[in-house]
Length: 309
Length: 229
Image 1 (cartoon, helix red, strand yellow):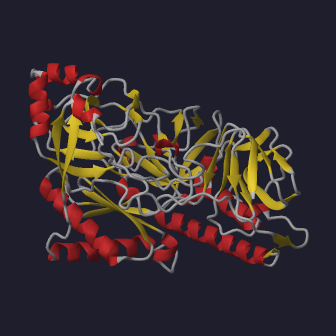
Image 2: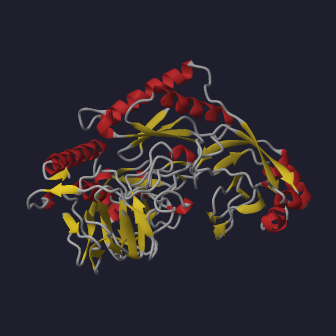
Image 3: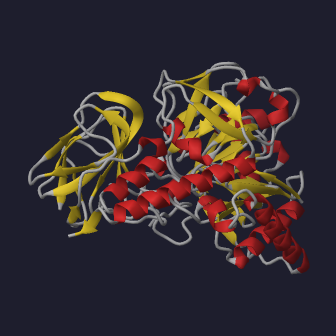
């Protein structure tokens, strides 16, 4: 069906779980900044977890559906839109996002998924190169975007157990493992609160707080970097790289955020803050394993409740 | 070879410290050896200057959570052994890129000429006379970091990067030269413009150049640039 964007919101893009296999060409992973919320939003309407959905940033859109559909909104919470559960939209019905209550990015899935071309192995929008998603750009008022027709039967009344969600907060503690140049910065990364600045985006979260002064070390040869890498430019204000970050970096790498805590960062808005705590690589892998186990249980549970019509 | 984690989903193998053809050759051999294994769970392999970074999915790589890193390192060691045993497998190509070095296409030509003490004609002759090697692709999709700039043309980056550098701009940053494949911000000194598309998202491969390739710039006139295709 053809879904109409009545109001687009501040920055609404189509995102999936990103691209693999193109980093060597300089193309970042991209995809949802908060992959946990995207995956659950898709599961709740019976989609494959990597189906394209809308990533909504800070202010929400208003969207009209010409046919009945199931949708779900996960991640950031907005007035007038129930989060983390399927929502039935009737023929000609609209989803109107009210005021933002919590978080930075919400994911709106529709049963069947949004129908956009695959570019370089992904359907997500990469804004810097204007590829993927809907015409390589954010949605605008009046856009018409197709979704794959797909009716579902949803059984019973149920809600998700919030204990399985990431510990979303405006002031989260985020776990990191040491980066190559950690020793050159001592304990400064763990010495206090860092504020999220307005210059943050899908490429990186720019922080302001204790200055990270580097002791010693010369110019670095550029190497690959990844979402979660915390770089320190000469001004000492750390940048946490996010989904659309460039693939190579030449700044010192003080630490790396563990994969399961990336959603906590994705939900930070300007003015929010973050503190870092250290963990180990094997603990990061155990956390990732536990996270996947939780999602697998959710997938099994939902298979009985969300069925093809 | 030094191995170290890059977060919980990648390992960096560093093969040297000098930016030169010998180190690049071993980087490319290791990169090819890893790709040749087609190992499930290795999602991306990124060669750059003196290192190869292998991205992995810890869930796919190891059955017991907590020991994926060791498994990946053992895998990379075995790939390095195969790379060392075999002949260099990488297939480098030579690419000629026509460049118009004139007028509006070269807003920083004066800066480069003044810094080097050369005339504009000498800068052009020197820049188009050298053969360059691709050491990495990054910054933006398809952006080649080219080594081999004549020392005389070394020019510092701009103090304040431009917010908008047009696609096709050919530029110098320090002792490197490169081409901006898409419109982007950029801090290098712009000395020319090409029509050659370095990033073609609908083609395979999407990047015209790969690490190891050699590049030569050939001078074209404004008329030739405008008459392109």
